[in-house]
Length: 609
Image (cartoon, rainbow, N blue to C red):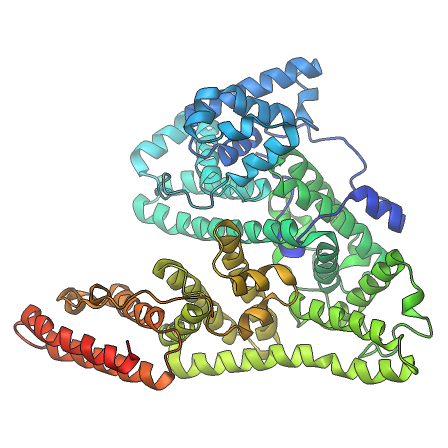
């Protein structure tokens, strides 16, 4: 099973733009111009990924039939089995195969897509992908006896079945990541089959893969959503930023060359075009290793590894050291040129070069922070070159750009202070109160999931060294807010959330941070049923008890989003008193039946409802 390109893309990119447009604008040759493809590519596994991701509810047997049928059709059309190895420009044949299987497409709810023309059909099928379909249960840890026997009898079929299982559960996951994880799984099976405690071995080792799959899948979905919603200029800025930090000694021309092709590969991955996604990604990785002298000193050991391990190694490699001799700031970066006299293409190139130079000087900053600085710099230049003294205006304004960094630093310091004071659980509760006020339309489970991720990310980032906290926190917030925006895109939450999600990628986090209680939300009539207390509160422990308490907190704030901190503390104190009294009482249920209504009445009075 040959992997062909790392989630290096995950790490360094986001949107997409026409390769032709970029080449015309910048005159840079592409790494990907060669159309040769790998002769060793496992077409069955790749095609399995495609159909399992697009037709998630199809059985393994149905997917296997579609794989066999489409490869047969392509082999006949190309005239030989070997030329079918490229499979370039064969996406229409794959989509046609889905629609050819009418019974499957109807059962899986894809008939409306099949009635549309080629491009619209593709968009429709992409839109039908579901991140966590309720009809597909979580992947089960292998049962040693049957799994080891099946693996020994037919290893390729066993691993192909695994590829099917993870692809249908992670429809946004890039094909290279799936093949990489499948290769790791392939190593685990014989190891655990020989282990003294095979069950424990499988549980421990597959848990790590499952965690990585989940995290990578969320990140891929996030990146594709940003690409879809914010367009080519934003993509270019994000990619330039990440590449300039990763390869800080590379010049702007070299960075731009990579940007073009990373953009193309990302587009193919997000489109579900597994073949080009894989092939072109492998070429990018090979190119990076061939250019170590001008790109980075940190990837030499990675480039000695087999292609299967190379991508992950480069992803996790440190940023290259900041080049010596760089000026500490970019004062008068424009020189004596008039920004307003630039054409739109010249402005884009100049701003991209500013992002490159700023990024390689600030390896400690997160991408959105750098993009906020760049946006502020653009606005500064546009304003100053309409003033009487543009250079004086520019000098004063450049000092003010530091405010974007300072705002992010202040938030990181405040969040870490709260974490140190409250701990992870009570920090999540603080986040819950804020999230419920901003987005009371979300369900309790959605609110708990978002705030749990926020609290976990804060705990993780705040335990890093101070120079790494900022990038960690802003990066995590970007992904978490991105998930909320994906939810809003599917089912609108409220106008304020929508405004933050769509107005500016760079400013999404500050926009969300500044939101107050949603003014369009009308609380439901007070219902005693939301505040019923039983003995299960006394029997529950750990996470279960925490969830019950958080449910009470969510219902409380949803009932009155304008609740003050003092009111909240008073009601929570009364609730804690109820638990302490009744859980120590021998007649717990009778105690709750008597004391519960008293708490409800007191709560209603405190809330004024």
